[in-house]
Length: 296
Image (cartoon, rainbow, N blue to C red):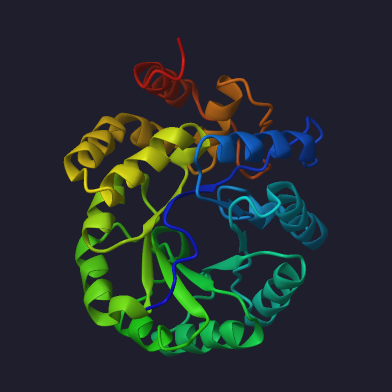
């Protein structure tokens, strides 16, 4: 059995920006502290929600170093180091290890999407190059590339390949992964509206956008499940559905960054090509935040 990097709810943390578009590290530190104080079980930095595609190499590595320093061992720091260029992913992953990350999050190659054999070769090359747990990230709606259960069963044999963040939305596929990989691969939900279904299939938690605005709630949802209160966990899952829907009413992280600003954080704007949500999405977010008790 491979020890999970974390059990519970990890936040896919936003990257706050100044008005000039530069990274606001002071605000990032405030958010990290608040997350940990409210029970978040791990910090995922430089993921899609953190706008890593628009970061320079210097910003990307600086963000990881800052998160490691600020977290100071209180919870694991998982660094997003995936790429559609295997050599670059290897370089970034090695750099993250040198900078103190506890684990890596590795999205499947996108645009120049590859075959299943290519995915196995890609992930094996990265896992061979580091000595950290690797969490593979399957999100075919963004990448156009689906990492199958059969491929994961092969990859799970590698000692450094620890888990998959499953965001296909296909519960049948998750069941196939659980059956094919057993205790050789941990499974995390990549969808906030499917946390409980993934936990029911043996999942270890969620890498969450929802946790940005509701860290304690998302942690508790998972904690109830692991404590045996499955009915309570399910009730929390269902109660959160309108907010989950609002947080994905536009391209992530547009809605969650707007929501964080609305809640009083200095999140700033997203970098282009992402733009502010339209008035309808803003109204949906505002209504969902109020109904959830996050706004009075």
